[in-house]
Image (tube, rainbow over all chains, first blue to last red; front, side, top):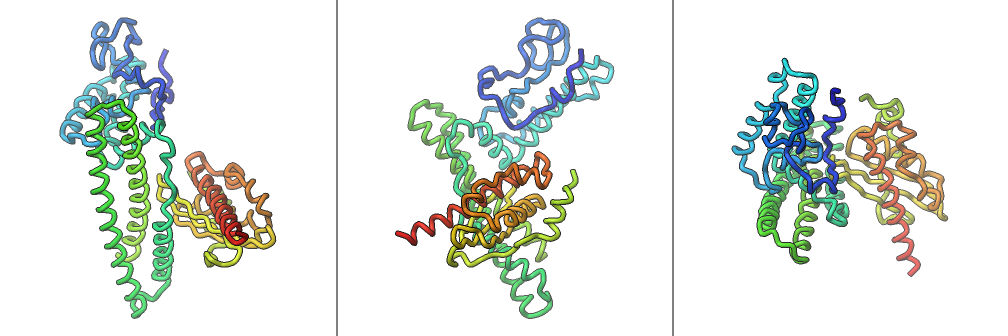
Length: 247
Length: 129
């Protein structure tokens, strides 16, 4: 019986924490011949493609440890290798079950690759995975930043309705250009800070300590990352608005 | 997915857009944001004798976020503090017919109401001290 498409293609960011221990590349028993699957993506006995488990996270799917620095070339190579194995084009003449699995695997693989390729998305995703264990990961809204953004939006509004060729219009424009530069510098600073946190996270994971101190450090890093990533999004949005209006 | 007529209406004719001075007598200010999409919402209430006599908002975000906060200010006016506490994001979802991907906009509006009420309460408590 064919596997319903929507069931196998439902790859959301949420993961079942209880299923984490059984993370594996393919199900351990072949759906077709019921023998133990020893190959990585295919059953060695009946040569059928195996569905990637829905509980597999993107790092595991692509065979990378849960770290924030990733070798881009290795990631790309792995993605191409797996794409070739799963691509629906190679399953044209196969059974409907295999076609469905190939499609679902390819969809998961594409999402996994797109997410891990971008450092910011990778960090957001890691936070999603790890957030369950971190209390109060939602930080208080940055009141100062909001004040600034709202004020800037008012100035933008003023500029939009002003005569841009007038002296007042020109003045507003200069002011907004300055703001844009300041904000872009701040965004860069945030990204530098993030890089530092990424390195701290990786180092902590590499040490693999299970002490209370290590757990506290872990939570602190995650919380700081969450905070900077959020603030970066707010800054990015206002910079985009600035660019769209004055350039 | 297209926006519902009510969202479009609030988007095109936002009610109560603007702001009060933060330190004005009886004014409570709530500022909230959605880190996922970067939307920023400011909602203010003006209270006299335990009743919200006026409300204003400023929202920079998508149509649903603007509509949610616009609707929230409409609902807030004339309500007592206690009644205002009872406004739920699900009421906003229902009224505006928000699709699942936009439910967080209504949550943002509820958070903004709660923050504004808390700010008003805090200022009132400080005054009676």
